[in-house]
Length: 302
Ligand code: SF4
Image (tube, rainbow, N blue to C red; front, side, top):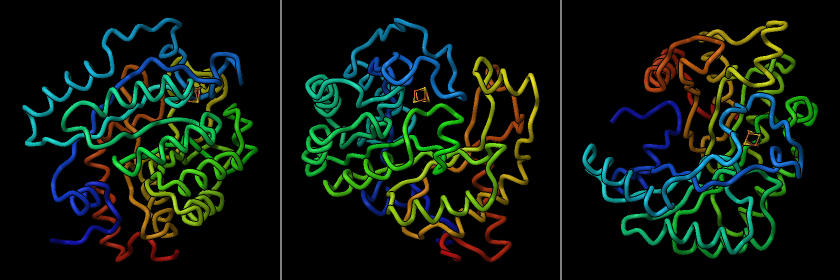
C-alpha cells in the first residue's frame, strides 16, 4: 500500500483495531457556559445562534440514538464496532453524576467500544477527568477540546471565554490519566498570520495532542461573525491558499499526531463564505496528491 503523506485517522484505526470502526454522533441535550450566562450569553462569534434555540428538544435518549444510528450504519457498512461521539455543545458541562449516566448509557450498548466527548477546557475538572481516566482503562476514550487558536488575543476577539493556558492544563491533566485528546483549530482569522499557524503546529506537537481537527475559517449565517463580515468584508482563504497553508502546517506538525480532519464542510443554506463547494474526500485527495508532488510529508520540518 502507498503510504499516505500524513497520518490519517482511518489508517490509525485500522492499525489499532484491524477493522473499520464507525462513529455515531449523539446529542445528549447539553448547553454551553458561553451561552447560558455562566461565562457569557453571546457565545463564540462564529457559532450559529439558531442551533442554540432554548429548549431544543432531544426526542430520543442517548441509547435510542445509538441504536437508531447503528441500524442505519450496519446496513451500509460492514461494521460491528462503534465509537459514540458526544458532539453538540459542551458535553462535560454538567454534574459528574449526570455525565456518568449518559456516558455509561452509551457504553452499555453492545458494540460500543468507546466515546469521543466534545467540550471546552473550562468544562472539565479533576473529578471528571479522574472518572474519564478510569473509563479509559476499559474503553477508548477521547476528549475533544475546542481551542481554535493558541493566541489569547484571538480567544478574546472571538469571545471564547477561556485562555490558551486553560486548554494546555486540561490537555496535560487528561494525558496524565491516559485519556486521548483531540484539538479543534481554525486557520484563517483575518488578524492572524502564517507565523502564528506554524507556531500552533509546534505548540500542539509539544503538548502531544493525540488527534487534530483543522478547519478553515468559514462564515456561517446568523452568527456575530457573519454580521461583521456583511458590514465590512474581510479576506478569507481561497481553497488553493488554504491547501498551501495546511501543507505547511502538517510539515511542522509532529509525525505522531493523528489527523482526523483538515477541512470543514458547511451546509450550503447556512454558509455565507467562502463558497468553495468542496467535499471533504476531494480535499483530502487533493492534499495527498499535492504533498506527494512536492515530495513532502507530515513532520518534515518538525
Ligand atoms: S462554539 Fe462551542 S463553546 Fe462556543 S458558543 Fe458554540 S458551543 Fe459554546
